[in-house]
Length: 332
Image (cartoon, rainbow, N blue to C red; front, side):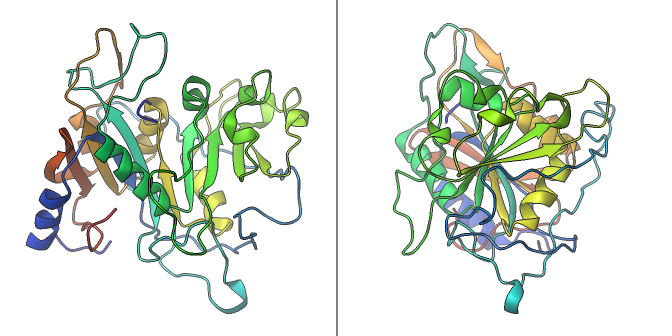
């Protein structure tokens, strides 16, 4: 996994918190729920819908993927609503996470090179390069999330489970839903990845142009395929906005995005990010795979750094949307 709001200014307590928790080079970005009004669909205690082995829904992308000039400031888009369901609309997500933290959290880890390396091409096998303390923080963040989202490349490279393992789940809490963006459904063919066979809930978003060859391969009742129509003909680009709208409709209100870099950039460029944790490990790859993002990327997405600290020798930077505050307490 190492690869790949209130509108008030943060006060002294937020800065104090940040310097207390300190840590490794990981990148987490969070969206806070703000605007949409949608009906919530009942989900099981494991977080998936009751009625379908393969759940299929069709969406049309708004064409917001890589649509802006690289130097343009990115307007923030409010995907989630502040109001929570009540009465017969109440839903049960997979979390048991802090109900005051909502939206999306994107996490990534980098080396200390100027390229912001996410992997080392000189290695034949993907290895963790952040500290144990940083990894514990990542698992706490997963525990605080309704769902954990990655791009298909992260699954193919790491065969990740995206589950909470290094810290205990809260009493009565289930594992977060796993979400994979895989336009061509490539992870369904050939190799059987861990998250497709461990019996835990997984949602795979894919393009309608590439569903005929792969959708019949999803035989597990825990794998939920969601079809989306991309904006441009021949494009494999899935809209982060539409993905988030669908996840909210399922009652999943805090989404952690763990990468890889292309997925991170897509969420930043879509203007849907409120909060980021950037973890940089004190190592330098021989042949770094560049993340193709930097401080300017975060700045164009409307984020500013509000503090930093140490976690097991890694350096953690905390970024939030301008005018927003960090969650209360020692979060995550």
